[in-house]
Image 1 (cartoon, helix red, strand yellow):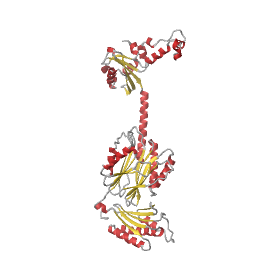
Image 2 (cartoon, rainbow, N blue to C red):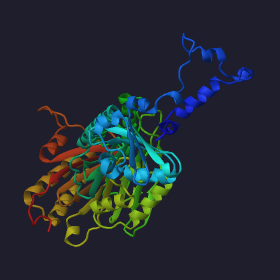
Image 3 (tube, helix red, strand yellow):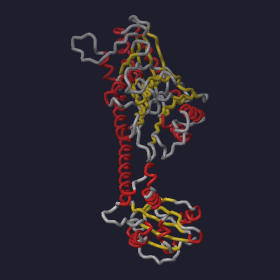
Image 4 (cartoon, rainbow, N blue to C red):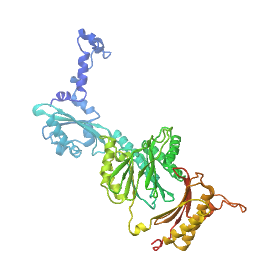
Length: 551
């Protein structure tokens, strides 16, 4: 076989031939950019020029090439030539034998169908980084060679073992980093959600696929006392361990600020300043909402986050769009609170952008699709949560983190409804307000069939809270009693916004013992400023776990 003819097909031969032609151009074309003849002829110190490629022995050249070279011809891909590097890697093979039997390594690598394709199409094909039976990795290039009955395929294999091992080490390092970030992310999320008396909640978190670094999505449910519940969801911009660490700091700060029982916009204002202190280059979106069962509304504030979706008991879905401020960490913005109805039978969904954002569609289209899915999603909060995730097409290979928080305000009926009751009394002031409040509380607690001990403690706490409001507060004043299936809540509101504090009363003091008494006998107590001005002071008692209480 004429190996000189096959050499024209070797990679780089045509480029070298073109360069040689350019170097030996006629003298009258030197002005067009050709290499001067003297420079082309004086390649060595001797008078004889170096031999051209066509004058070299092809077999000698190929045998010294460090890459693996094989030449096969015909439909059976019969072996025409194997260079020394190939035989050193896989052993001697008989010339003229079909590749399917004589070159099992190519068959194992799945290259025989590729040889057929190259022979039929006449176009070269490359397969990158295949691990051969000798344990090394090669990149195979199959190039058509010859014409007519002598058509064949030149197989050229480059050893890329070092590159493949380096790439695998890099992938292993990235997997370890991702596992670390996922572990950190999950450990910073609540392991178990708090269970409010008046709400049913469920949440889910799905990290991005293996090709996507973990983000900083988080959620939380915080019971504030007095029957109120705070709900929060957020998303730190960026990926990896850093984003997860920033998320953990923000989540911890949210829980601390929530204990102050501030309005949602004031909580976001504090978070905004903290985010700038953590990292001036890091921003985050967040929604902070508070549910008060007495109001039947969800009061919220948003820092650049996606709108809350609420489905009422009739199946109508509405979007809580306003107000929305810039993300946390931008500074210089006064956030504002808004509200959306959340009555019995309603379901609200808080989510991150990974649930609705897609590269091939507008964000509003994704939110609209989520609204449609929520309109048809029935069942408990966990069922709704799972259905929304499935409807959005979230899979283990999803390219972004997804966090979803679902809350339901159940519509109660029958015996369950008897466990959730409210009673309120307007306090008109004067010396008769305190005894009237005690009589009202005694009658309500008796009608709710509380045990005698809990009845007496409730009346005492009512008396102290009302007396404190009459002495230090201003009208309008109101007493509210609320019971759930777990606790009794007593709350007094008035028009003065100075919050009471517990202090040690000296033996000679005539006042200052009311809050101390309430804090001693109650399971918990607290105070907060009300949106319209004024304050609310509350305490709560855990109900005994007996079947006959309140029935």
